[in-house]
Length: 375
Image (cartoon, rainbow, N blue to C red):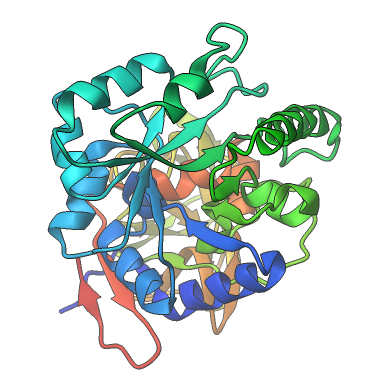
């Protein structure tokens, strides 16, 4: 039996998105971002699919995420965005991970910890994100130190946009100009590494001069535009379909309250469908009063406070029955609900929605010609 509440992961949609993004950025290389369990989609199955599709470099946030992929026999190089500490460096070097440098201290750690093995490194430079990245005004000799390193093989240079998903690209342009100035200086010195990347999903769409020879994409791989303010110049298919079933039907009289806090009351005799999904599964409580679901191709409002394990849907007098499929978001033959629209309804972003689908929800992996596989 297949789980009644599940997240179906459509690998054929993933392949489609990968190909469409590659067309957009050609001849630049695409670096798929599979951090946070591939944004909640399942990093191992997603990464295997992407490598089969031609991805030759993956990106994650943490050392543990990279090790999980390597332990699953995914052999391509893996760029780790987050900082690696001295106790992690020896295994990371042996595994062929691409280590991000945050400053001179990281080079020193590698010199001490890597033994006789070369460490392939990427340099993240601060251009305006204000989160991580080498602060060149504080470490003006950083690149001289790096090029003299006995253990570091400098493979890549990158930075990260803070506002590429906004309609106003003024600040993004300021960041890009800072990054380009650095590239020009390094190029004049003959010290530019082979790979340069700055574009994320928003910049892939709207800032073509940031594509350089590699681009990173996360959210668009999974079928979602970063925000409502970007262009939609790429066709995308949602990779995750979050679904459940009707578990219980009850007929409530007029004037009857539904759920915690008595936030909603029937105005007339109403049929309520109870669904076995809630905020413990990733349907956020903040969606109370804002969420609609789809049953049989028709949208219905979720009523009353969203609870940990159940939500209630007002289906009027329609012939909805126990066992009927219910779409929370995704693409189906009967219609679609966009994750972006669900996120906008609660003032969030698609990233948070898919990452927030809990491990209690089984991932059912499907693809063109593939049989169902529950993870």
